[in-house]
Image (cartoon, rainbow, N blue to C red):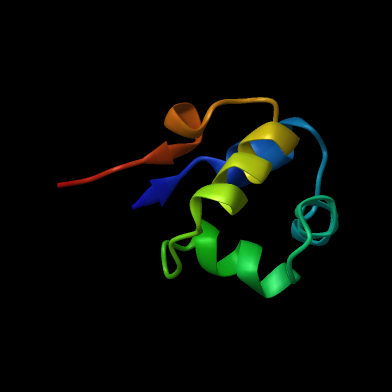
Length: 64
């Protein structure tokens, strides 16, 4: 799964650490999600989308 987290963080001037604090996870978790090495829970995906002012559908790109 790919994400647009890095792109949207840049738009809002947020670091990985900033986003991690807002959604209540460690910076490394944000890093692993951005790299596609970790699939977040639905609750975490929703929190990230909300923090980045977007929808889950716009944030995550699902590949078959």
